[in-house]
Structures are given as C-alpha cells and as structure tokens.
Amino acid sequence: MKILIVYAHPEPKSMNAAMFHEAVEALEAAGHEVKTTDLYAMRFNPVSGRHNFTTTLDPQFFKQQLEEVHATKQNGFVPELDAEQQKVEWCDLMIWQFPMWWFGVPAILKGWVDRVFAMGRIYGGGHIYETGVFNGKKALLSLTTGGKEADYLKNGFNGDLLSMLKPLHRGIFQFTGFSVLHPQVVYGPARMSLAERTEALAGWHSRLQEVFNETPIEVGTY
Ligand SMILES: Cc1cc2nc3c(=O)[nH]c(=O)nc-3n(C[C@H](O)[C@H](O)[C@H](O)COP(=O)(O)OP(=O)(O)OC[C@H]3O[C@@H](n4cnc5c(N)ncnc54)[C@H](O)[C@@H]3O)c2cc1C
Image (cartoon, rainbow, N blue to C red; front, side, top):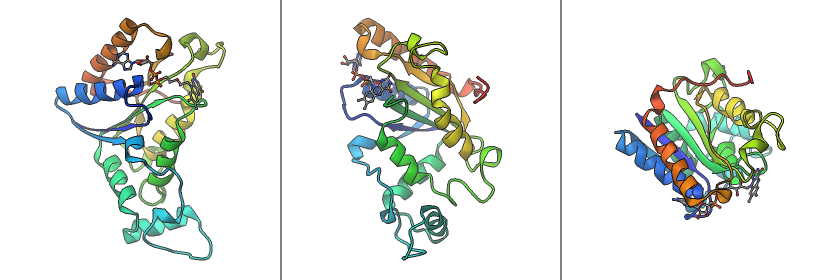
C-alpha cells in the first residue's frame, strides 16, 4: 500500500523525529511504499495567499476558494503545492506526526492544510464527507503531548483528547472523505524513562505492521 507521512517538528533529535523514522522503517519493512513531507526541513511556508497560484481569477479581490477552483481548472497551483496535492492524492493512508501545540497542530502543519487542501481539487462541488474526494483512503494522527494521559481523560485536567482532535478528524479528514484510524498518542515523552520511550516506539512499530487491518473509528460518537 502507499503511505504519506506528514511530519512537523523542528528538532531532528526529538521524540517526534524518532516516531517519524520508526514509522518509515516499519512501513517499508512491511513492504509498503512510503512518501514523506518533512515540513520544517522543507521550510514550508504556512502563509496562504496569491503566491499559492500561478493563475489569477480576480486581481481586484482575493477570495482564496474561488482562486482555488480556478487554479484546479487551469492547472494553476505553484509547483510546491501541486507536489503536496499529488502526494495526498497518491496515498492510501496519510499519517500526521506532530507534537500537540495549544491543543492542536503546529502552525506549519495547519498552514500546509490551508494551502494544500484546495477547493475544487481536494473538496467541493458536492464532494464532501461520504462523497469526499478521498473516499476509500485512511488517515491517522500520531502525536505527542506535554501532559500526562490522566490529564486527557473526560474528567481530566485538560479534558478528553478525542474531543480535542475532532476538528482534525471531522473537519479535515472526514470532510475530505478519509476514514479515521484511532490516533497514536505518546503522552508526555519528556517525563518518560528511556526504557518507556523505547517501548512506545516499539509499540508504534508493531501497530504499523498491521495498520491496514484496522477498523476506522466513529468520529463524534464519544
Ligand atoms: C508552542 C507549544 C505549545 C504546546 N501546547 C501543548 C498543549 O496544548 N498540550 C500539551 O500537552 N503540551 C503542549 N506542549 C508540549 C508539547 O506537546 C510537548 O513538549 C511535545 O509533545 C513533546 O514531544 P517532543 O517530540 O517535542 O519531545 P522531546 O522533548 O523532543 O523528546 C522527549 C525525549 O525523548 C527523547 N528521544 C528522542 N529520540 C528518542 C529515541 N529514539 N528513543 C528514546 N528517546 C528518544 C529525547 O531525547 C527527549 O529526552 C506545547 C509545546 C509548545 C512548544
């Protein structure tokens, strides 16, 4: 199968980096084809604007979604975005590897979505949710937190993690047609011993060997 891993962490020696490399290794060892997007290494610009396009529909008033629909028809995305769109279109499974920042994704990853997931090409024209462009594909969030697991339970300090992830699971993945696999979460890796982190990496490795046999989760029923 074909897997795209989108990775967002600025430090190559971080736990997120280790999880990213573990995933590439595990999936390739299982015979899958892997492509990656390393956002910080690419110095991906997360700021959206007219520079997304080589085409212009309305030079007087910039309305991003209308420019996206126009660019879809005219092949008008800049090569940097077209390459990312092609990777998403190519994959059977998309994994995002990131540290939780402010109960969400780092801005560089949010900006990647803002620019790459374009109306006309990735959604719209009746193609959302069950009729989404990416129907039949799967998506999986793999993240780390600063907080402990107990902090992310329903009655925990921060509240329920799955509810926090709903904007990503429902608003991005399911909206564009992806089925959602259960997130992989390493809670507070900086508080763990080396042995615990090694075990967490091994658990991620072994999960990935069977990831295509997993049943998607029901988003929003928790
Ligand atoms: C802007 C910002 C916002 C934040 N918001 C939140 C929030 O909303 N909620 C929250 O819970 N937290 C939050 N945090 C904390 C953040 O989520 C955690 O710091 C982060 O998830 C930890 O992951 P890491 O990869 O950065 O860990 P690191 O600190 O990089 O890694 C932890 C340890 O793993 C070690 N390690 C690396 N590779 C390996 C390996 N191969 N084997 C074993 N050990 C290894 C590292 O050496 C390090 O000691 C925020 C942080 C920032 C900067």
